[in-house]
Structures are given as C-alpha cells and as structure tokens.
Length: 180
Ligand code: 5GP
Ligand code: MG
Image (cartoon, rainbow, N blue to C red; front, side, top):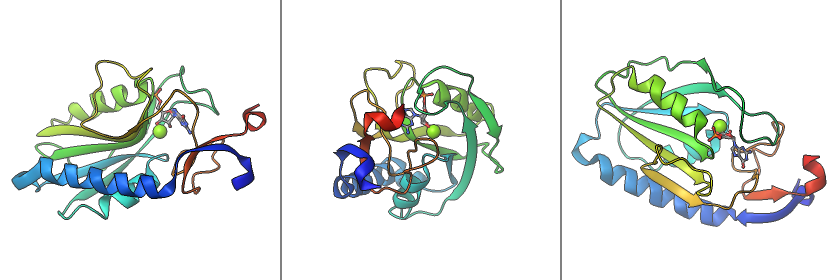
C-alpha cells in the first residue's frame, strides 16, 4: 500500500496528537452539560477518526451512525447528497455532536445539519478532522477542526479512494496515475 502514495500530508503521530487535543477541547466545551450527549457520525469516512476520538472522551454518550452518499471516486463535488439512513436515536433536547471526516464544499454537512435540526436538539456542534479552507462555505463553520489542508484529494485514516486506503494510518496523496 505504501508504494501507492506520492506523499504524506499528515503523518500518523501528528494525527494522534491532534485528535487528543480535539477531544480535550470538546470535553471542555461541554463542561457541566456533558450529559445527554449524542454523537452522530457520518459513515464511512469518519470511522477511524470516530473510534480514536471517542475513546478520549470521558463522559457517557450515545452513538448514532448515519449513511450519506454523495461523491463518486475522486470527484469531490457535484451530485445530490443522499441521506441513506437516519439516526436511530432520539435527538430532541439532546446535545448533538456531529462528526465527519472532511469539510470540502460542505454540501453533505449542510444537508445533514438541516436534517438533524428538524429533530430539535438542544444544540448541534460539528467536529471535522479535515477542512479545505479554499472551498469551505461561509455558512458551515465547524466548532472543532483537526487540520486545514490544501485542496488536494487525500486518502488514509478513514478516507478512501474507490473504497480503498481507509486503513492506512497516515493521510496522504496517491500517485496521480492511480486516480486516472
Ligand atoms: P462535500 O459535501 O463537503 O463537498 O464533501 C464531503 C465528502 O466528500 C466527505 O465527507 C468525503 O466523503 C468526500 N471528500 C471530500 N474531499 C475528499 C478528499 O480529499 N478525499 C476523500 N477521500 N474524500 C473526500
Ligand atoms: Mg464522507
């Protein structure tokens, strides 16, 4: 797998350190309200981030998983956002923390946030591991961001290309001929 990468953008140890820092910031932000918290994660890109992050969170939580489908292959924009499965937990009056792998054009997160707000959570916060600031929309501002990255198609640490490379522990860019 290693030979498929052109370069590593964020090595595994930096990811791990940053995820621990994010967990600390999340824990502080909920403070005494660290009750009735529901973590909602968007599959499949967030699974590795989710698993690492929530093991640093010291409060009780419920975990809901959502399937959303939007992009195909390496095309990161365009296409309809499809909410393929809803969260099977009551969200009304709960503190909801939405988790996703990457904020790119924001179409996915806009649709998901709209859907979650209909269920009247006490509040809705957003944590993303990665953000591409050159494309991120002004109306979706995450409460917690791991790393701002340049506008390149990245894989690893949960992010895929054609459903592969999710298990690679670093975040990097594939050799261009592989995207062809
Ligand atoms: P948006 O709706 O913000 O344009 O796209 C968000 C979704 O597109 C992400 O949750 C992710 O699944 C996918 N995506 C966007 N940029 C990248 C990228 O650089 N690499 C990978 N693997 N997926 C991406
Ligand atoms: Mg995604």
